[in-house]
Length: 162
Image (tube, rainbow, N blue to C red; front, side, top):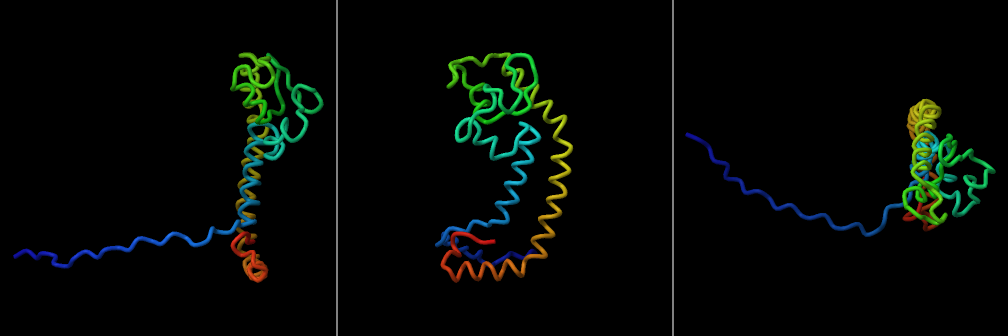
């Protein structure tokens, strides 16, 4: 004789949406910025902030020759900014179309060269930083809790936390 399950399945309640946005965790933001900086250093030869801002918020070092050794066409580029990558990707970009297929090949050679030179250091730094951030989070949990209580007392608990 087989047994039939006579229990009726319960209806699950849907979760209510969050009333407040979660606060920005400064320690997690610092960790993410470090990893982004290591990745851009390994690929493009510069940290994350200069990679993003060079040519837009700060003077470009590519064509002026003041910083990176960019040689369009055949030579090796030390540093490549996001603006330069966009100008290569969009034909006839803001530079009036002076980038060519040779510049694209130069960028690929630069990325390969940067990886060859900077990737081992970036990988090692990322591994050590991962352990370091884990230890820091463990050791500083109690002081961070007190700081977060103070932040909540100031009324900024929904905006930022440590």
